[in-house]
Image 1: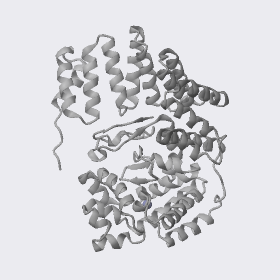
Image 2: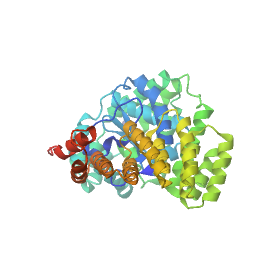
Image 3: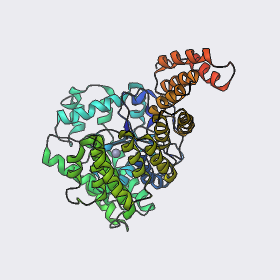
Image 4: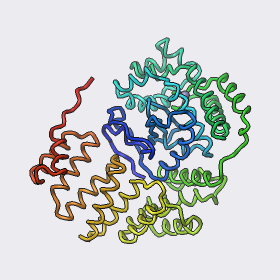
Length: 457
Ligand SMILES: [Zn+2]
């Protein structure tokens, strides 16, 4: 799992859901901590694909973007669904996340929040959303009166007087109910229960009654008055699939993802907390392995990963994690073998895993391996150009191969994709002086040098 730091203009970076093309880079996701992880991306893709199809939005290039935040939240901005890592950690079943995705798909299919989208584009609202989350915790207050508070200029509205903020708070109640109804329709069409969605809603409404002060960001973006939940419950229970549970294989993948997120967010204690009622769950062992790895205890991490691999030998992400651990143990050749296995088993051909394989080759420091690294990293970037670390690896692989011109061109392209246009031009100028004129590489450098920044609206 890699967490982007201070990614400028990385909007499109989220989950490169395989079927869909990336949107153009937009400035709206500035500084959002976007997480890239092959395992969770594949899982969310599998959750979303049937729902998007049922919603008739599968051709619209909808992306799911994973945000590194411990709170439960999900929201849309027109073509993207943002999901916090905390949502995965909180949800006990795949069905709960599928319900969240179904509801957000209802917003997307209904073309809701058009005005909000416009404002997001203009006001870089993702930064605003960030502060909204903070505000939710600080400002407190009940959720029932959000509209009133915003209108009267009291409380939340006073604390955050921006137009974008008010617009976020005035999510249309009617749109919420429409999205709920659409969500149940999609869930029925795909033979899934709306129980997870209902449970999620109930949990939040109960929590807000009990806790009083701690308003979850999800409630700010999706107010949950009692009558909405009652309506939802009525709809959900009508479905013939209400009592249907998730397939065990999917539940296992979900548990593994929860263990991983818990390990990254709070280490072993967090993993133990999540699985306190089910300590022998493979997700718990996975989380423990990752926690050990993160603390530098590679021996313990390898023992647990190997134990899990004995039960799930064809799980590509276990091989991937083993590769990560072996890299930390300074065994790049063995790591490369693990990543190669992971890449072979990964049906989605994730560019993330391929880039890790390239990095492992590079880490051996052997010139022959640098060539293999270049090959893997180039392929990884051509399928997934929003893997920022991969540009760095590729540039180093070129440098190790004494190809400074391409090392600089790669730096230029990585900076360009990340929105660091000035740095991109600086590297492109240097590459341009060394590359044979008229070649494709020269042309790519020339394009970056000649690129004009779009004027601010
Ligand atoms: Zn909603």
